[in-house]
Image 1 (tube, one colour):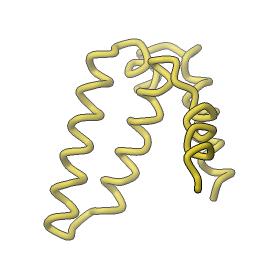
Image 2 (tube, helix red, strand yellow):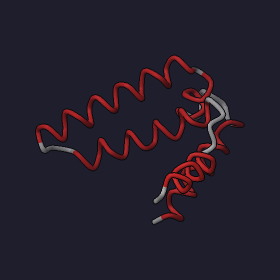
Image 3 (tube, one colour):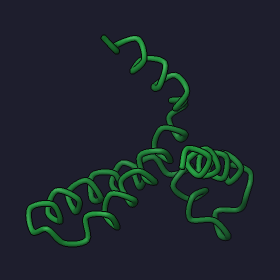
Image 4 (cartoon, one colour):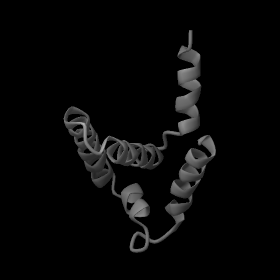
Length: 90
């Protein structure tokens, strides 16, 4: 499971070097307004899906993907986020 998440993060990072015409991820990485918009949209859709008890897994996956892309677009390394979470562990 964690290997799959690591693979997704690697793919997102690799897509920084691809063409925005070929890669939706690259388009998000290079258009911060679009990335912010998608994070907000997907979180809203997740909240709605939880309230209605529909498509929760699908919407959760969308949120995770768009959040990871947003992190990369803004030079927030997931490794640093994990380190911060570990520091908070009691």
